Amino acid sequence: MNAADSRFPARLTGTLLLSSLVAMLAGVALVVPMGLTLNPADPAAVLTAVHTRVAWHLIGLGLDVVGWLALLAAGLVLAARPSEHRSPVVTLAGGLLACAGLAGLLHDAGNLALTQLAADPADPTAATVAGAVILTAKWMVNLAGLLWVAATVTTALGVPLPTALRRAGVVAAVSGLAAVLLPWTTGTDGPSASLEQLGYGLHLPVMLWYGALGWWLIRTTPPTTRG
Image 1 (cartoon, helix red, strand yellow):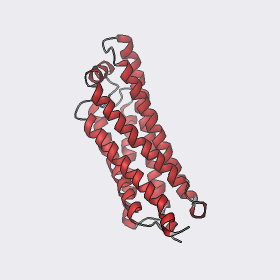
Image 2: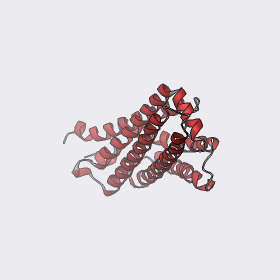
Image 3: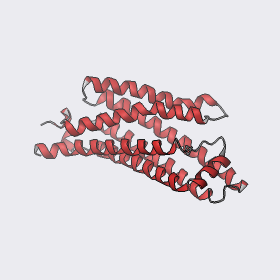
Image 4: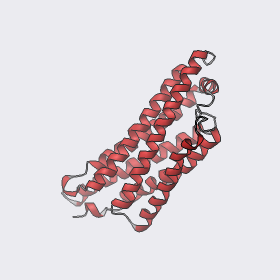
């Protein structure tokens, strides 16, 4: 395998990670100011918001799907490295990242189902079903966040990386874990809209770290692929 061939998986992974970051940030920047974060505390209001801004909701949802799909693909590429360079830790990190992407896509599937329920926001039955759908989708994205944190820890501590990037990954993982734990602190009440936005903020370091990792993978030949 020549040098260009050995660099291709790393560059592809990096490109996918950067694409995921851009798509997810664009989606958040769209839905948060427009009140489309879909908090399960008031499903009737959520249905009304989606019904009123259905085009923007679908655009934001599409960006989120692209983001999670790119993350899933990046994890699969990372896990399926050429056999002569494969490391169990790298495979585990890629597998966890792919699982996070899959959980995120399942979260988006719930939000897509919600779009159909929003066709008649005044229907009380639709509001009841929407509450369950939103709650399930929220816990699915919480699972995605937990898997993402696990992938971050595994990558930062088990994959050959620059010291600064490794340390930044540990800090990002701590922030992401705090975001994952937030909904557990609310008991039966569930997270408020402001608490959800705090969770987005705490997940941001993880997203940015993977963006930095993607940039590094594109520009640098990782030690595991040097031969």
